[in-house]
Image 1: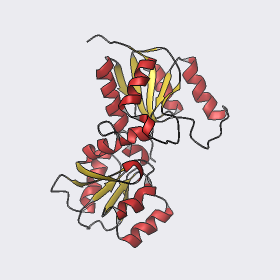
Image 2: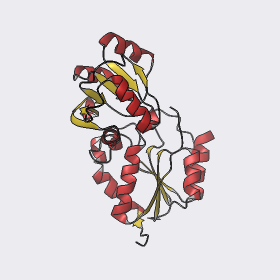
Image 3: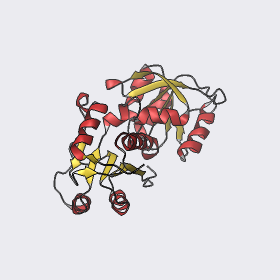
Length: 255
């Protein structure tokens, strides 16, 4: 099939509708954050709009980059200096569009990070919790995965990262809660929703104590590692929808 192209504003409008971005009060703008060429033939997706990703996208002949973690976060230094200046300069000099979708990409029922992580790990979702239903609830589909230790081994195998587990590896699995990335703030809501095990990307000192005191196991699986899959699924969808060339570029990040 010959490579086709799409007009930048048409793709932005399609994504605004498909991801229902207007329903979210997010920490950053969702949509086009940096304008480049008006038509897009080659799309690169990645987790974070780092300098490494921009350089690799340029070398791959991309017209646009779509990420989960873009720029212009609430409360950040608004000046275009230092690393921000270098990233923006590289985008602008090469005519690269930057699309970024944060909470809408976590939440989407088909392309979202949460549902894509569930598919990767073999979870059966059956509910939600927390503000806007951002947290997900469900169970493990595979009857052979019976304990926290079994699940930790599956996570290491499928996410290529060993999770940090605060809890008993021999604990029997019951109801799971999960939310990708930096969602440890939803741990209390997961406990209230009846989860016996909660998975997210990150963990800090107070969360360790909450896990110990509540008896609910916390599994920190890596911020980057839990958010690799939604943006890939969305990129594949856009490639099929508009006839684009698509490349996912994974810039390794241990966090």
